[in-house]
Image 1: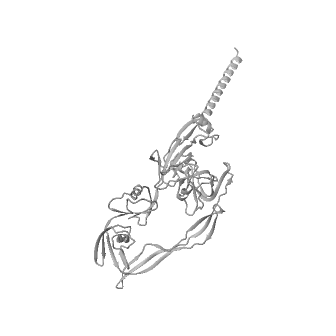
Image 2: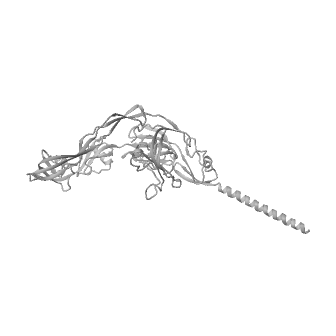
Image 3: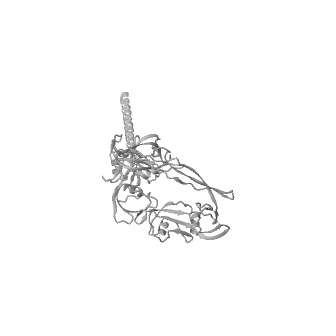
Length: 475
């Protein structure tokens, strides 16, 4: 073989080597491209989480590859035709057939819910849990935030507590308590109050319990009562000195005054001085702002109001009592604050005409029945204004986009409703925050990785359907 032949053979081998290297690089690139198409996707089915590693892009394909069946009745987010990227999340909520019995009634409310927390399921039925209420499942108490998992049929019992006014030594003015039962003792026990023989219960503990009644639970004390130099020992009880003296058979009369004063709580040592004296009273008062009485009008649109009658402020203040004996001041005492002149309430009408309107949004048209200007802020688990990261909400939902917080008064009215905020999207009112004084306020949730800061006024749209328990007047 000549010199040219050998040279040609070397060139052929070199070209073959280059072709082989190129083929290897192409195959490696294809393998790298194929491997890069795989992604981690979190799938949450009825609150149960799992992560899959898949090359599928559409939600429906990811679910099929993961072997997760879904039905047309399931609530899938994002939609089945949406695409999901690396680190994405798919949630599937399956319908729960709920049978809710309220109290001891035989009639049950049947409905379908996609929620997995007892408190949220009640919101779907237009109900809220109040202090003292008990939600029961299979005979056991169910916490409103307890996750129910993949149950398909759910029998719940809601036991509503009745309110009553409870007067104790520490709350002589009375406070609202909640209890149930056939007797006063039963109601006190269900309200978490222990009663023993050293206490006076009014009415008697065996008396029938009725919602709205007033119950006094006061410790019996030995009183040493001094009047005109005479000492009387008695066992009595009362939220105030005056009540205890009356029950001891020594009520204040005429110009009698007591030390401590009749409206004060019983002293720990039980010592009470009754002094017959003449008093001079002076008044120190300040205005009490009028309130507004509302009435409905079918002629006015929702959130439109009309003045019917002006009101007037009242007066609230104290009496200063100066006691003199032989021309000398022996006591200068100011009473507890009380109402001197009752305020006259203002009367207004509010509109009940609900107009359904449509708003075009980047996500498509939405229907709303109310639009309100609010000041919007935003938060995330680790941007909630506390030293630690908080992932839960008042409703039990997770802090993430699609959850909104409002003040507690608005949460009690609008909890569970769906709203729309331009630039943010749809959200469920599912959390409680402190708010901003003097402003209608909403706090928009994000996860930490996708947080966006909000601090501006915007329009809050309340989306249809119109709730059955409509809040007609916004405060």
